[in-house]
Image (cartoon, rainbow, N blue to C red):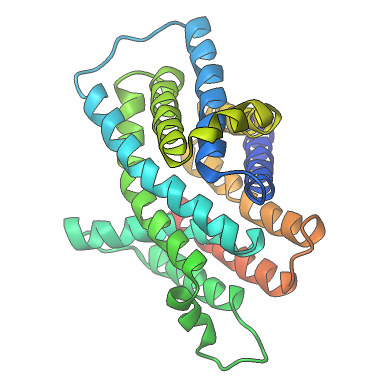
Length: 287
C-alpha cells in the first residue's frame, strides 16, 4: 500500500499546483509565472540528480529535449491562457482527453484498433465532458457548442492533443538520461524561453521576478513534489495502477474550484469529471 500513498500524494500535490497556478494567474503575468516556476522546479530536479548521480546521456537526448521543449511551450501558453479565462473546475477535467487523443492518433497513424475497454473508456470521457458543460437552462447542443465557442475550452483541447504527442518525447528524454536530470534540463530551457518572452514583452517585468519569488517557490515545489511522489510510486507498482490513482487530481481540483474559488455549477462538473476519471482509469488499466 506504500505505492498507493505516494500515488495519492502526487495527485494531491498536482491538484494544489493547478489551484495555485489558477489563483496566481489572476494577478501575475503568465510568462513571468511560467519562467519563475519552471526555474525552481528545474533547480530542485537538478539538485536531486546531483545527489543520485549525473547519468550518461543517450544519443537521442538532445533531439528529445528540444522536441519536448518546443511542444511544451505551446502547451503552457495555451493552458495558462485558458486558466485566465475559465474556471479551474472546468479546466482540470479536460486534461483527461490526452489518453483519448493517444488512442485516436494510434488508430490514425498506426492503424491500432482500440479494445472494447478502450471504446468504453472513450464513451465515459465523451459523456463526462458533455455533463461537464451541461446547463439545464440552455439547449441540449450547448455543451457541444462550448467546445469551439469558449476559447478557454478550445485552448485546453488543443493543449491536450499536443500533450498526447509530447508524452513520447518526455519518455525519450528519461530513457536517454534519467527522470531527474533530463527533466531538469527541459525545465531550465522552458524557464529561459519564457523569461526572454516576458522581457521582450515588457522590460519592466524584471521587477516582477523579485516581487513574485514566493509564488514561484510555492508552485515550483508543488510540481517537484507531485513528480517525486508519482515516480516513487512507479518504482513500487505497475505504471497503469499508479496512473489510475494519479488521475484523482482532477476531482480534487474540481473540489478546490467549488470550495476555495467559489465557482458555480460544481455538482455537474464533479459528476462529469468523475465519469471522465472513470473513463481514463478504464483506458489505463484495460484499454
